[in-house]
Each structure stands twice: as C-alpha cells, then as structure tokens.
Length: 145
Image 1 (cartoon, rainbow, N blue to C red):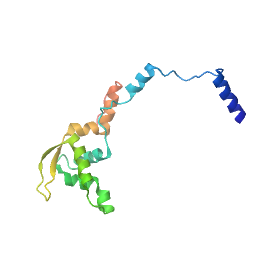
Image 2 (tube, rainbow, N blue to C red):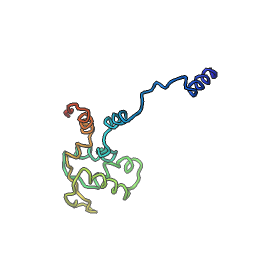
Image 3 (cartoon, helix red, strand yellow):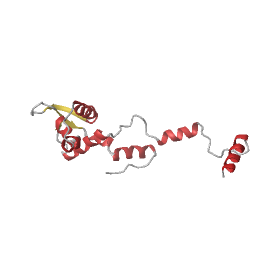
Image 4 (tube, helix red, strand yellow):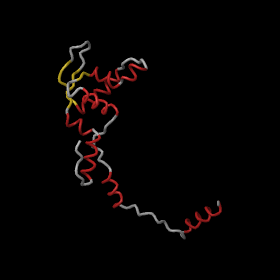
C-alpha cells in the first residue's frame, strides 16, 4: 500500500500524472465573489440578535439600556450570580447605535438612555433580510415573512 502511494507521488512529480482539477483563474474568483456577500452586509451578532428579539417582545416600545442588559445577559446575571459590568452596557450601546435611536432618558435610578427601534434596520439583520439580500444577488424573488 505504501509503495503504491510512493509510486503515484513519484509519477505525479515526474509529470506523468496530470492534475484534473478545474483551473483557478480570474473567472473562478469572480464566481466565488459573486456567491459571497459583500463585506458591507450588516452582520447579525449575538448581541444584535438578542436586541432584535427583545424589541420584538416589547412590540416596538422603547426600552432602556438597563432593561436590555438584564434581558441579554440574564444567564450571567441571574443564574451565575455575576454583577453587571460596564462592558455589558458598552457592548449593548455599541450594537444599539446600529439599529435604534436614543429618544430620551429613563426616570429610573441611574437615568439610562431610552432607545426606539428602527424596524428597517432590525429587518436588515434578521435571517429573512439576509436571505432576501442573497436571493437578490442571485436574481431570485424575495421571501415574504
């Protein structure tokens, strides 16, 4: 078995066995780039998807940063008993700037910012939005949700 492998490798190096793979030229690269989404496509990160789910559950009502931290990091805060950290708020604010607008301050202790969702931007990051963009690039009709 090992001698057959060695013989095959030797004949390949000597040029007797030809490579039958498809040539990888500019046409193949253009085909690969067309199949892949552009880098400017909005990505649906874990925090962004949790923000989207939380806004869907609130039926579009404004939510504060503190409420979102409690919803998104519920597992760490409740089950593991860990405290809220500043980086939790910072990560959520960074993701919120992409899908919501600040509309005011909450009347609660700490006066966190109230955020109003922008439905079009939330839809872009959803599974349906990503699927429809991919289908549009391929020339297919969009999927209705």
